[in-house]
Length: 113
Length: 118
Image (cartoon, rainbow over all chains, first blue to last red):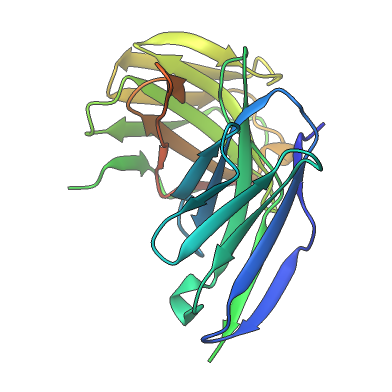
């Protein structure tokens, strides 16, 4: 089965608000995690990754938090914009395996103007 | 200047037919992938090639056969198409294996091929 999963299928926010997309994983051997964004009609696009030896990583307007104790990670998007509307996926790669990322089911982020 | 391209973008065909989807990347990457995305957006790895060698072959019916004539191309041939094969198929590439020498190499995805089997 899937090793990663997302808590909510859809998240609606107002433009300018901060968005938090959550993801749970089950494999303690997960060595890295990646967030992808998929806009309608397009392929997934890499956003940010985090290794298992980190608990926080920041990018441009995005922050990923990793809590290994409860096997949970989140993607925070600051000042959400209409262009952020997309499906967001978390994926994990397992240490000792092929490292091919396993994708969870996506969360659809809808940003209302 | 497209990084990862796929053809065709849409493919409508009848059950039992054989079809191919082509993928090309001009990024100079060593690793390429095929993913299947179902109607619920679930994205599942099918195959992966590194330097033209098959490194991942997930539980996929043997009606699906990938072919990598060179590092820049990874084609997907599907025999005896079934209704359940209807999905969006994504090709992707990465500079190397997803994690190599301690570094995570991001995957670049193509635009997808929407396959509809009737």
